[in-house]
Every structure is written in C-alpha cells, then in structure tokens.
Image (cartoon, rainbow, N blue to C red; front, side):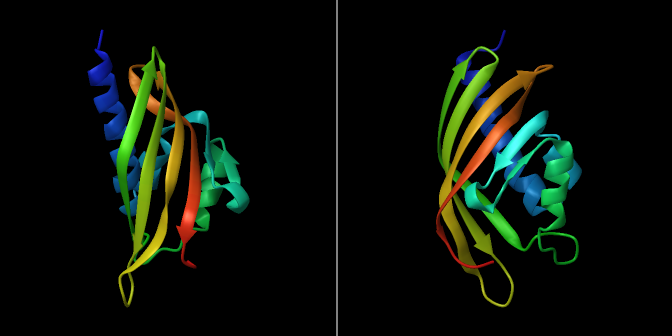
Length: 135
C-alpha cells in the first residue's frame, strides 16, 4: 500500500501530466486524466462534464499546427489525501505564444480527485480565472 507521500507525489504527477498533455495537443491522453463522468468547470465560461462534453470543449481550443499556443505552469500545490479520494489546490499561470509572448491567465485550480484501478484521476477540476487577458 502506497504511503501518503507516494500518493501526493502521484497526484502532483497527474497535475503535471494535465499541463503537458494539453499543451502538446495530446488530447486523448488529456481526456484519460479524468474519470468517465469527470468535470472541468470554468465558471462563467462553462462546465464540461463527461467525456463527450470534455471532447466538445476541446473543439473550441484555438490550435496552431495541431497544438494550442499556450503553456500551463502549475505551482504551490496543496494536496490532501483520504484513502481513494483527494483534493488539490494550485496556482496556475498560462502563457500564450504567437507574435509576442504574453501572460494569458493567472488563477487557481481546485481539484477533486479519485483513485481508480490504481491511478489518480480528476473527478472535478474547477478553474478560477482570477486575472485574465483576452484569448
């Protein structure tokens, strides 16, 4: 049985995989980070629950040569583990590329996580876009 520290490390890896898969346009792998009924909640920008809704969200992501021109930087994660359930709170900064590098978002994630078949998944990821430039 993994220790709490090992579980926290696995969860922090999940948080990093989210960024790498999304930013690299690896959308199938990104979808697999969520439970089947997992939700991505962007507040006023919409809530996307379940695989079909998450796939629809991906259709509106602006792509350049198949990838979003952004980089997510997640930091200051606070993780709490209770058996097969956990919570994580993190700061997120999103950089946008293009003609000039720009700060797009500074905000927070609040995550509800579930361990399924030995792997941590997002049951819900809520994004708070505290400071934001237009996309």
